Amino acid sequence: MATRLLKGVATAVVAAFVLPAVAVCFAAQDPFTKLGRGVANTLTGWVELPKNVYSTSVEQNALAGITVGLAKGAGMSIVRTSAGIYEIATFPFPLPQDYKPILEPEYVF
Image 1: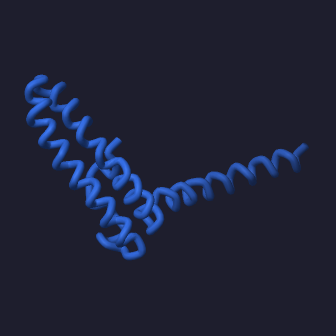
Image 2: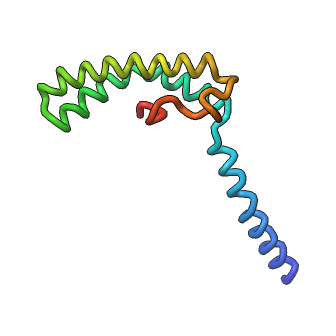
């Protein structure tokens, strides 16, 4: 019984040190995270259009959503899709430093 308890405590101690290290590794920016972000932004850049129409309509009014939101959405669609293409093309290189995203938020959704 004492051996079993000792094994359980040892497992908990090891898990307490290993799990945070693993979480940091997965949260870090790396080339493949940059590639995935680039593919996602390239494929979903068009979502900026309805997103901006909706958010502008909610923040202001429907007329502003149709006009200003449409213009903002069209512009951001081009920006997000272009950023995605850039990140796909440069994913092996740490540009910007440490593979940081060039747009905030990283994804449209």
